[in-house]
Image (tube, rainbow, N blue to C red; front, side, top):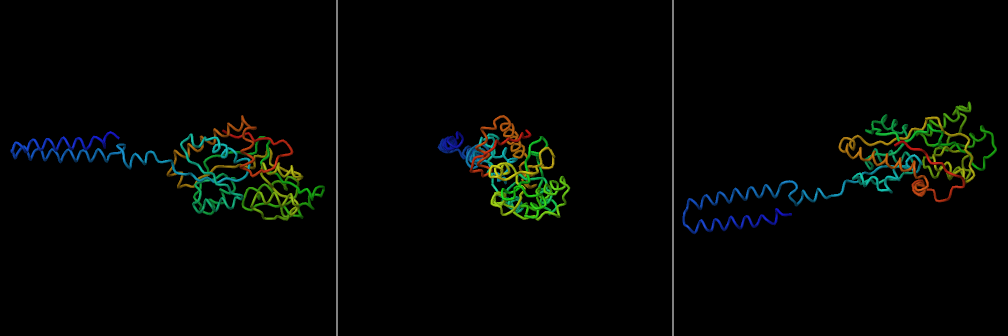
Length: 314
């Protein structure tokens, strides 16, 4: 701010110098003074307009970072994102991240395709499907995979269908979501019991919380649910008969559209640093992040059985 306050004084001294020279009635000296004044004013104009001097450039430097809209789902694997947001890890990396919650992979995919979000958390299969449809998306990290004996998805039987034989349960309807990891897992679950997928009546329900409600209400005999809703459904009387624990089948990833990655490589690195920090925090502070999990997954009632937190990569 020193520059703008000094400029008028410099001009004033130059004008006084000219006045003194003209009082001597020496035309040559007067012309030289005029030339000097023009040169000095030109120099001042360049200095005032230069970056860092003040004005518009300074206001741009103090402007907040642009908002990064990032899509999430109400599942336990996305917990590091919510922890990074609530604990201020994104902000400490100089980022302004707004997490956009979706209740289905389809809603999230539509938002990415239409440019409403810069990236999202999701399963590997949906990214492959989007790439197959020429959507410019790239995976930047794997956030979790069920390889350590901890389940992330389970096939559960409704309380009203408890005790039924598996063929009868499958005929009563299995709520899933097509073109997602659930298609893949359902086939793998049934194959592990020697049952072909064609023997199951698949009921399309992409909205995850509604899928759980259908299961608990007996509108379907079974459903595939992610954690922590699988544990919550068990608290409501459902029974898990198969899960992905230790299978390595359920890779979940972080992905951005290619435009964002090209324009903001440093922001992408900072984003991943914040998520890694949140993952480490979860691993050592399970009880502290439980309220965050309940809010992010939409769990409004207490679990009747202990919930084991995942061990995240960091």
